[in-house]
Image 1 (cartoon, one colour):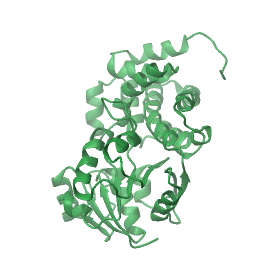
Image 2 (tube, rainbow, N blue to C red):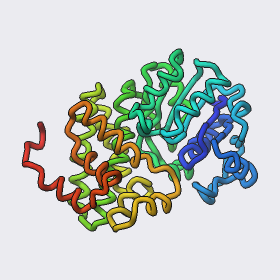
Image 3 (tube, rainbow, N blue to C red):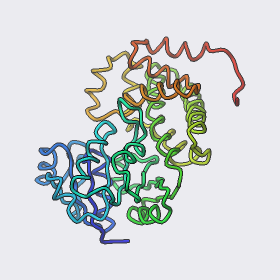
Length: 334
């Protein structure tokens, strides 16, 4: 499929990278962001120097500061806004498009304050919408922008729509798979950010590869426990949007969440570490919402709980690690 008109809402690193991919695939892309000055800079410099320095925007991208003009005549709307602003942007888009349009979101995390999954936010704001898909998986923005090989999952309960979305993105260096398990895909993309903070803390404290492998493996167990309770599928958690994204985010310093954990493990203050990263760190607020969700559903998620305590309850990282290691012995599979 070529030649579609696509509006990308969100010009951070990930939104810009996906806009670049779509433009290279032959689509006409309008790129909008809540920061008008940022969009004007993109239009002038034809490069997102703030987030993807040195990678020029393809000709098919038009940075547009006016939301109405950006959405005008769009066949697809791709939302790549941090979870805290996701609902607000949907409401603004609805004012221009109505309640039923082709929606894709590549945002990850839970809504701060409500703890709702993004598909639940979509259902509340766009209840009549029949064409919905979430894109997730192990994918650093810089590598996608540079055209390096990447594979992701497109989740939609509408199989025909999922296939249409896959065709938008699919190319020799970007492979997309379809999936019907939106709950599992969104859960994997949310929890992995919290677990990446944990892995970063461990590495920042110098605990080594053994500890990191244990955190990833036991973190996957937490994803699967909560996921099973919420109706997600085991196959999803063992796939790209689950295990794949978890391994990527926990092991590579391109991850903002891992970098936050590294800073905390080295003794830096939370506010200082977040400021140094300079972009949204989704795991920060997601940790609090996930801990509350686990408590509400009475699902055991000790790593998530300790990360929340470090971030919000002034628990020293060393104490959090000790709390995990001194828990009562139990069967690995239970």
